Length: 195
Image 1 (spheres, rainbow, N blue to C red):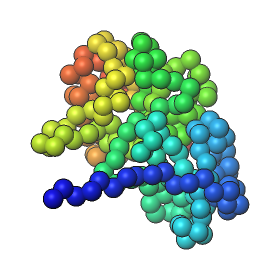
Image 2 (image 1 turned 180 degrees about the vertical axis):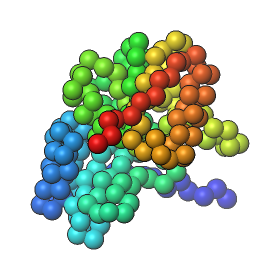
Image 3 (image 1 turned 60 degrees about the vertical axis):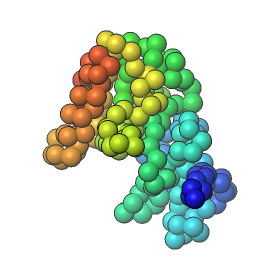
């Protein structure tokens, strides 16, 4: 007998004063407003009275939540990955562009787009969040990322500054390069300035 599939649902919007204050403060540190990333507050009571907000993705089953705490600041549905696509862009517009920026972190991607609004940009929720696995264990690019690609497209991936010191992030960048080569795309790797 087949097991029923659990339906993932985004947390509901709750006008929670603790979460609203945290959301505005946290996004302002990145030079953003909730509208820049389509964020909305969620119930702080569910998360130990710490402020929290949701960053929705194009796929209605995918989202990430940001929490006002030191550990597990970001959460997402288990075994679910996707790319964050700004609501102002479509995958076909991104595919038509000559250059695509893949930026580690939705907030960094939203800030990048705010600064350079005529660019094709997507966000990944972590260094490895471009990767998908088939049922047989084969690693591949996420389907939505595949839709953004075409031969000879210039891809610039901007990882967090820890790419300089963390072998796992360096391995993610190498894996991304190898998988993009399958699509005849050229990858350049960058990172934000280190203070």
